[in-house]
Length: 631
Image (cartoon, rainbow, N blue to C red; front, side, top):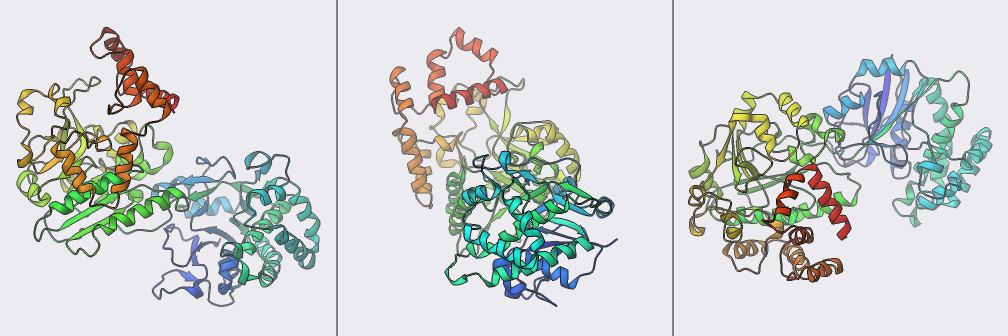
């Protein structure tokens, strides 16, 4: 049995593909492609309508398949939407019953069962059509439940199809397929819809569908006033095709003898293809790796600027920023993209510095499945899996936004770090953790890793299994690698007087004496750069803001600082007045409340610490509720 599912790919977009011969990747609008080395099949050979891609969208590769391929079953999906063949649905949106995965990684392909040719063929052969779920717009869509499907569409998607477009569509149905005119009127007054033009059909039904839909869409396209329409409005024929597909399949399901299987349609947040990371420079020094989160980009910029400013002579810096998948059509993605462009400008024209972004979506296995992420964000797992994310590197330095290099990072590594750590070297958290029996735990500020050693000694699958059982930041490294974790104590670190008074009581003298002076330090570390002040006049504050002013994020950082110090909310001011607290006090509102009602050192505070230990799930829930109340 020959099954051909056409995957429609856009011109200029290099997307991930599924390693399964059932899927045939076709470039929609290939006639406009400027890439002579494009490896994908174009929709511009043989009998084709490739030049109509701007208005007919994925229908141009579908037309090409209809006219130029021979198969027992035909199908269509998009580079960012696939029908799932799994027996279990993934988490789906409130509306449309549309599932969501972050990428087409091997783990996700396995999850959807779209990587198994024999399984898919066996399932498909039992049916005449495999279709996305039909959803009920009265309960699954935005708008008034009393509205008809057409009324809701015009309310929510009025830029897709206008009232006039619906009139044109109905007149063309009446002209080319009058037997479907009454069913379409009834369909528009109903509530069932599936859309998106994704399916698998037996040859006979596929030909029948194409013979129905293309005469209507081609004439619809010919009638468009394309000179006066926006680029999005010009896609009206493609949206009209969704209505034709949805109505036609709805009617076919009513016919006896036609076997229909409904499966979940799944959207891919980040569909873009990428190459694995390779060393940028031929040298022994490792890459400096940062882990980007939604709220830490401005502070990462300061840390990166300290690297750049402290680099000496002919030293070369290989800087890698790891970031998770985001929906490429979301505002979060576009905001991050703009910030990343500003980060790239920091090294523009520098041949001695490389700065790259990398999404380890294909390197972290089952971790990238959202239902496996329990108490942590995906990025929290990157450090423990760095040996496989950077599979072509032997060593790496993982740097947080709380770390600032004062002297040459290359000299620091070669003099202080190289050869000192067999597996992992982590900075210490010198604040005693009441929830752990051991005196100190590693933190995530600065980590050095012998990647080659870890890969040789441990299996990635075993590490992932361990990670899926645990939660918590860099303690993952301890849980996964046991005795191969060492501590970086006095190898060029420094905690300045910004936190000196705070940590003095918690650090045994033998460790405190090891902290080098400011002038001798290679690396400056603060516990939380998000709350770094500029009012105490300490050397690390001055150093931080000297680096910050060099970045494009200086105004953001300054605005954030002013907001934290001066422009507190009405609730915050009321709390500070009630507790007789200075507006310059750097403590959060939650901390002020806690310190006021449960003074440090009191019996009440000790009891609370025992009943609700800091860092526990109960403690986190109460903290979140307090934040919500304060808002």
